[in-house]
Image (cartoon, rainbow, N blue to C red):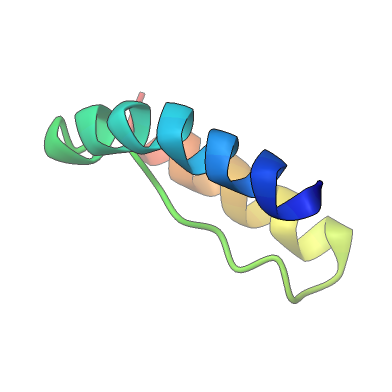
Length: 50
């Protein structure tokens, strides 16, 4: 069941991610840090692109 869900996720998300990546509107976030650091990173990156 999990493998099917992941397959569907990739199938539907892939084109969306490709679109935003090509438009230079996709950012990647390293989620291996405390939530406060991640939030600050995301906020800073959004501010850079606004």
